[in-house]
Length: 90
Image 1 (cartoon, one colour):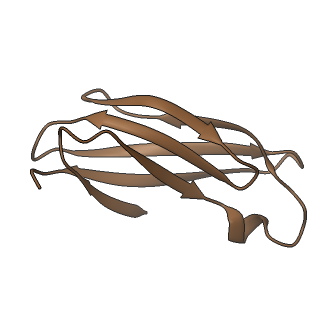
Image 2 (cartoon, rainbow, N blue to C red):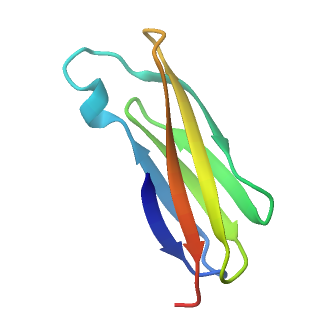
């Protein structure tokens, strides 16, 4: 699981990258779903053929949030990746 530190006032983009996993077979990301727990806000998410970008804001100092990104590929494969987001004053 990937871990990041986020300031509570920051509004930043975070990347879930499947390019190595998809390399070589021509499969691409066809759909994605990002889930965030209460207390933190997903402002926007988008995808390319190999990655998902999610914009996150908010959070409470001292809290840790688990962000989940689930994809389905054009070839029908599915995978999920998680990001542990620690909120701290920077």
